[in-house]
Length: 96
Image 1 (tube, rainbow, N blue to C red):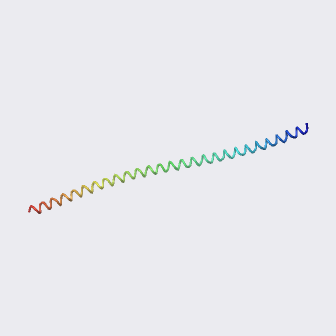
Image 2 (tube, rainbow, N blue to C red):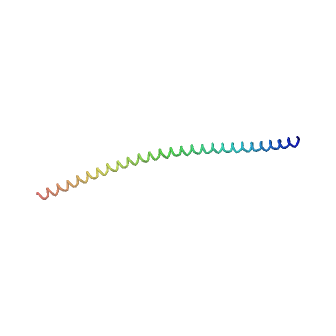
């Protein structure tokens, strides 16, 4: 009976130790999960900032493209005016 009790007590101690180890592992995993969740949240915030910057860059690019198109249109209009003045000048020079 004493041997049986000693065996059961050792078994109980071993299982208690195993339970403590399992609980420690569980706490460590929960802590890692929490750390990883915080990291993920920080990365999502960084992505949001990058998306905003990208959108702003796209908007500025479109404005610049429009500005360039306007300038090219102005250039073509001015070149046409100059060409018409040259044609008129030569026309009047040749008439006179």
